[in-house]
Image (cartoon, rainbow, N blue to C red; front, side, top):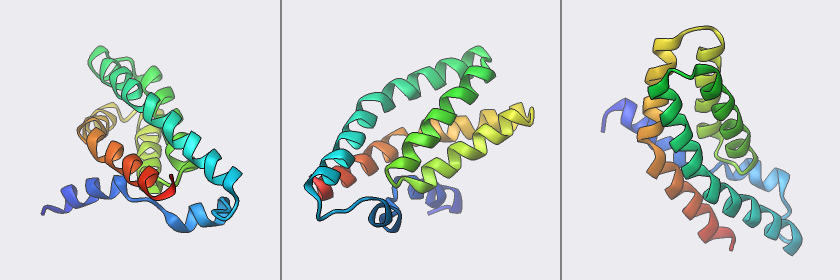
Length: 128
């Protein structure tokens, strides 16, 4: 496996340390909250990717920056720390005017959609 492929595989990895620090898994209400957050993100993530693809092909970099900012926050809140960090890198590239770099990173993120969905499925399987 190439280093880049391995890096992209990491996008689906859950940061359990983060989750255990921020959610009390012994409290049914907190488990339910986390489950609701994950289910809501599952419902939104496909739309995020569609919107991001439209922005990429339409040259709408300001809108793309706003979408990856929302994705960064959403992924970070549920322990998809690497996906969150990658979205942060894309956001920074776009803010710094590094459009070509931002385009390449967005393309990588779009190619990783199924990995992220798999990560969400895996998280739900463990907490539900």
